[in-house]
Image (cartoon, rainbow, N blue to C red; front, top):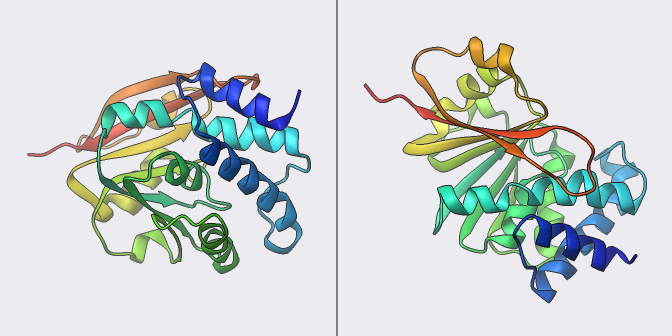
Amino acid sequence: MSQDRLLRGGASALGIELTDRQCEQLLAYGILILKWNKVYNLTALKDPATVLTHHLLDSLAVVAPLRRERPSDATLLDVGAGAGLPGVVIAILRSDIHVTCLDAVAKKAAFVQQVAAELELANLRGLHARVEVLSGNYDIVSSRAFASLPDFFRQSRQLLAKEGVWLAMKGRVPSDELAQLPPDIDVFHVEQLNVPRLDAERCIVWARKRLS
């Protein structure tokens, strides 16, 4: 089966009907990851099929939940984005969300800038900085395998808007990490994900600041 059909089929199983342009951009992004991997050290994956399942479909799994939580215009900071996952995928699917992919490694932020230019994504940028010293105000702060939940929330707290939400992508439900959270963090939903063609547990931990 072609990469195009696999991607469209996987997206459809996640409740997403890709446009031709979105499909082209996602596949081109996967090719760019593999093309520049040796230079930028972006992923341990080496072939298009695993990039499609473990990166593209895995990141696409957050699109429908994100649409439910933020149905219209928003700003999103993707912390420790690396190759731009899930930030680039969100930028492709949601032109109304302005996505900043943050990484402490300069060459990874530069890769995201290159992706934004090549795929003509005006709503995407790569930013080289450390999260704990960054300033700003974002409606959504996301991460994918960045750090423990307590560390992620603590380091990015100053960046989350008053009514904003954290979107933390995790594997299995991180019960130990959830138990360590301070009382001023409100985890309002732990959402199980079913990623097509990926035999692994996935979930989103949704949280917000508990306002006194």
